Image 1 (cartoon, rainbow, N blue to C red):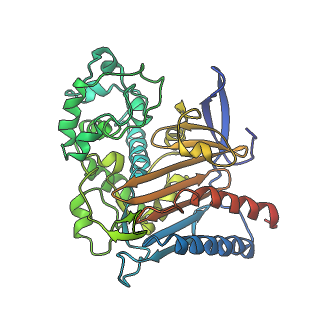
Image 2: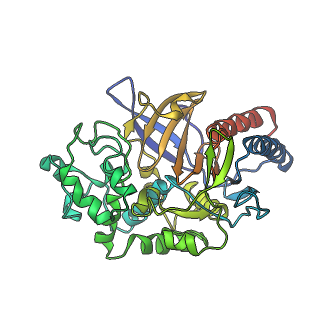
Length: 398
């Protein structure tokens, strides 16, 4: 990867997908905002908004919200459509959505905060922190670390114990059930996406600090970052009066219809139970771009973005994006080799909500998109943003 000049560098040690050797990659995180012509940036935003609005309208998805942060500044923030179909109740910038698996990245940021305060170690044993956790392979259970949980490399089959999540079993009950589960690979050697296993880290955090996961999120991230509408429970979203409600798509009638907010995945909040507005996500993007070292240090931010396992050969949708040469999973984040630079990304899907978040560390720009219904626009929204931004930087005087 190219070397870029900046105030400091994040070194990413990435296991190449075609070689067994570790090679060093560097991604710039320049915390000094760049000077850029306002009219050039406005040109890009104007064209991207037209693209988004046009395709959103074509999709007929009831509601959406978008935020873009450049350097440390929110340069675009807007709600689209309605919270509930057949109403005129518009989505605004404080309307709350479920952010689905974007929760995993939030959890990793919290883990970074705990690591900064010596309350968590990346290589600490899960079993030592969570006594009722085990596997059929007891030796592997003893070897599992926080790193393995956050990178989906515990050696379990894909989506282990997801049926228990859907049945509403408590996290404590789900963890106790792992002793019945076998493994399909040695820890650290295979990527298989998880929700239940990922959320075991909640109990690691709670046992390390003596505080609930919900309290830790509020005290360490939501309150200091100014994420005023963010929460991590079903009760919180139910009592909120400004919520984008979920909608299903009927493939036969070709229409959307309102569906219920359900409690699934709030029992594994670390993996998929966080709620937030697009204004909350704006403040969160500033954290991810490195402008809130009071919440997470640059060293811990580097660590959570550090690729742990190659996913290039997996059936992962990001591998289909034009310009992607390799993909990896870090800690709660996907890392993508995209057109000679590194992109940090994650998507989400729960209770009919679709969510997308991308960070481009080299260009110091990030975007988050939230939808309250499935739609064909959800898939291309991030790669198209990248194409638009690359066109903008190539054709305007910066």
